[in-house]
Length: 143
Image 1 (tube, rainbow, N blue to C red):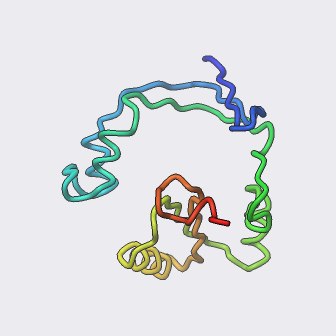
Image 2 (spheres, rainbow, N blue to C red; image 1 turned 90 degrees about the vertical axis):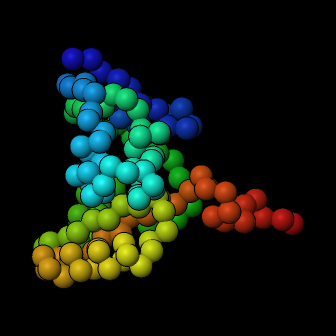
């Protein structure tokens, strides 16, 4: 076992990963299980899995050290314990989480809400909010 320290963009230590497992995944099997197809022409995430995800996976225990520094959307940036407390305060006993780095299109919306209704769960939508995709936001703003 080895430990790997993970730093944020500002140089602060965020977490330590104790590596317990390293394996080479069967990406074709993973694509079929997750996306229902292994054809990158059918689902764009299959192409991303094949082309952008590393050849080896690493698993282990994470130990949080500090949260990353953010200056925007402070009221939306909750720690895991604050998020769980929010669920409890809203009376949510079952929660379906959906994490996306793309726009939530109609098919995703229907999938999420149909599944939540079937299992009697509230929906926790957790989008990635960044400027990694050109055209997402007009940034920097022209003066």
